[in-house]
Length: 163
Image (cartoon, rainbow, N blue to C red):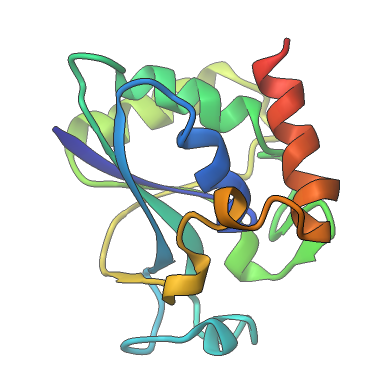
């Protein structure tokens, strides 16, 4: 088992995508690498705490490689827009990979170097992770009829998985 952390805008979207990837064992939405302890959603929404909305991804590397997860990550969000994904603006919505070992760091940097020079995805070592409030966990699956989910997440899932 390995763990990595991806930030690609709203964590509801990232979680919904990776829930559908074989080999992903567990997902936890949360906040990482900021400057206050135990932040709340209201804290990080100010954009002043330095945290990113992330999804902690626990995966079985015998079933899915980190490189495959990186490909999914880059294909399902816009890594060229700083601090924004769609209508979500702020540093908490930045594109970032928070690695947990040197191999993840190396693979992430190598992939970015092979892509467009317009990529703004941050690659940083995970410092600290705080799970988000319970209502953020499994959000799309529990709230698929909510307007945000219908207008933003459902089309993203359909586009990626029905290619």
